[in-house]
Image 1 (cartoon, helix red, strand yellow):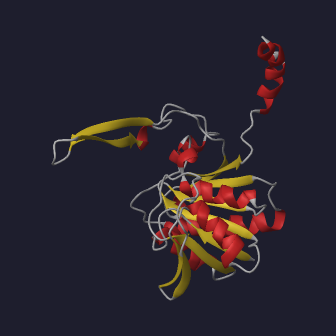
Image 2 (cartoon, rainbow, N blue to C red; image 1 turned 90 degrees about the vertical axis):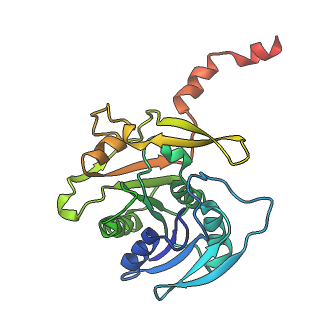
Image 3 (cartoon, rainbow, N blue to C red; image 1 turned 180 degrees about the horizontal axis):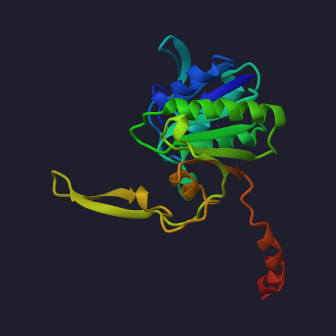
Length: 258
């Protein structure tokens, strides 16, 4: 199997190369990743400046660094760098969980979603810590899941969003097939003053406040907080299909005629 690896933390990130080490033992892996951290850029792409690539060597392996976003990396990887489409794309391993509404901001998840738009099965992998001790736990699960996805496939436009506790395998409670939570993150702005006495604002959030009030184990964050690996299928088609039928009863044609 040929696997394209990327991330949003930059090509020198530990999580990316933990994936590479594990997957390259059994599969051909190619790294195409941002040349610097691009966290929380969501699905943005570069339109108004040129994209440049540079081949880098890291721990004896080769990768392609791109001065763009995670979605840019997928586009370049598929259309320019690789000679043929990969069998699978894996984005990660991201330090910090990508659950709930954080999925919408995540460059990690958006890279996988970009691959799905090209018809390539894709997995986004995150670990629930910022100072990670157990990348190998997530890498081992990613390998197992990747091989399962390669055997069975995924529907067009569907991505598996995986979040793993930062624990050794023996302490993982299990795997939960979860849905995305939609509770609001506890955001805040800290107002400061720069050395020239000009005010500015710095966004922060209390990640620990996400869905701590919900005990439903079918929600991604709850499953993760209870030491389960959370696997959430998400899709590129964001149409609210039940709402389509409701809108038909609104008789918007007559409203426009007025």
